[in-house]
Image 1 (cartoon, rainbow, N blue to C red):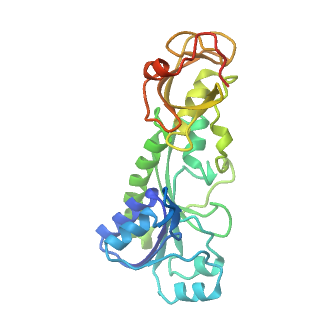
Image 2 (cartoon, rainbow, N blue to C red):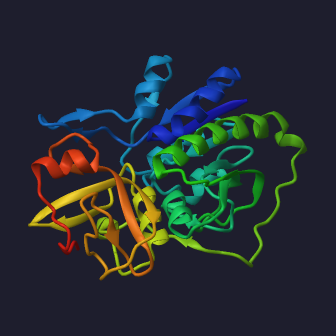
Image 3 (tube, rainbow, N blue to C red):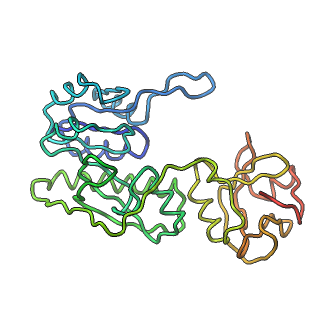
Length: 301
């Protein structure tokens, strides 16, 4: 098939790899423009742009697709389908309508649950037992299109980083399978029941809330690993909590219960396993406490 691929971050790379491996005619790859990063603030291309260029595929990085000239250039590609994975730009109706089979999106949830920007983090925070990937036909509106295929996987204590990588791999394989069968698939409309929205993560949500039960605090830790990183404050310093376990214990929410940095929550306690000070490498709690005293009875917030 003649395809345009539209994606930007690491999540999208396995799908691009699957299209290349399947031998499709990739007419163009679209990615968001390079961003300034690092100490020198040099322009840095996205993971998708780097992968596409390494494979010798033309990459287009428009800042928007609302320009009629950009839309005409897209239409001139004469595509069978556009494959989209975490592209990050809104696709106007002329873009959605241009390919023969429309635009198919790799979405990291079991639609209609968790439509929107942060489905992986929201699934973890909500305590969902499973999540997955849907291949969705894109329409005007937020993740409302019909589903061509879906595949579930257990959340099972994974961090957002681990789950995102797993869903990316599932999405690439599932998209390749859908393209092989696209003329025989009858997509299913999403039901009206069970719709939830995965709103964009606000960095302040990553501040640990010890007034919640310990099981919910542990979900915060996993949902915000690797970014933006769950944290608590002590002595004016922000300490990230990268891995933790919900355990027994009681005390005032945020109270340090022992010399191992066990922290009381509304119900139970949270036992840190990996922590990180600003500008330092991740470490065990005992390593942190050797150079940064947090005594029993201290209150964290």
